[in-house]
Image (cartoon, rainbow, N blue to C red; front, top):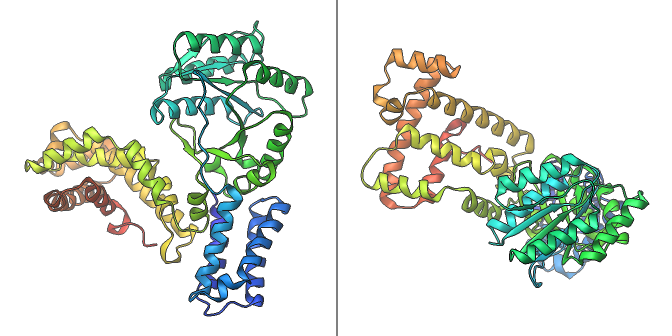
Length: 458
């Protein structure tokens, strides 16, 4: 997300950072570039005008002129205004209600609403430790009910059945009654995808809202529709008292216009970002972290949270104990480490959150990422082609075994030899870091797997 905008803004602000003095003239040039970058990112024109004016008012005032590093002060202003534009701070779900707290989901057809219900149910269950019941009030699409049932089973929450003969209002009321009986904490009601110009269906969702009085009414919208996402959310907000917005498919949105326009146009906070198809791919929206990513400063906090949620602690502790006992780091452990990185969303997800140091542009970053992803897949295929005995004791792998492994993994004998050599290097490193302790150091050692023997130089 934001690749194009990050590229443009990073370059523009890099030009101004080293300036010993900022004048109204050079600020004007930089602001023109910022304005163009935002418009190209499909941010709504009124939002761009307001943003640029606010930055200009602060930049030409005493705030920059009194600073020892005016260029850096200017970047700080741009960052602060980006945060303000997107909502200043993360706004959590308000679940302070007599159980069950009811969440109503609204959105257009194809925005990923039902998938988001599954993701939100998982988020509430795993991160908020809530019991969750989900129900579909979409009586126009039988597949939607079945899809939600499948998702509920996948994430381990209660599914309340409904069918096409029932009225949406009755379905929602019955689900809430069931939630009360079973002492469920949260009930999420999925509704039919609709177009805001469809008066009949808008009337239906108003009736459902009035009947169940939800604590949260979330509008799910596709980020790839750019400023149209903000305009659609505004139209829905005029019909329903929305409490927040969920932006979906943001991993496919290189522009980021929706994230920058929604809050300003609707007055409603973005509460979550949908980052992919998987049920865990839902992140709370933190304006400060997103502003950092837009300016190429990375998002280390989210990276740490992601590692904590996805790392298999049991496996990590088991490996640490094994190494402390003096047992070697074998190829099965090596494969586990590769899979841990894959569970964190792969290199794309990791590099997106790392600061773009030293002016590495996104094209270079993408190339390094592609090479490394390819190499990771190849390594996993080679290890999978080995016997359990070979994985535990790579010393057994002779020339004939290498040929068999290469044939089984669709690689060359040289690739197998290279992997065994890399594993030996990592084994030595593991002995050193285990003596000093810490899984963090051990994970850092994974950088030795990347092309060139380290993280791509950024």
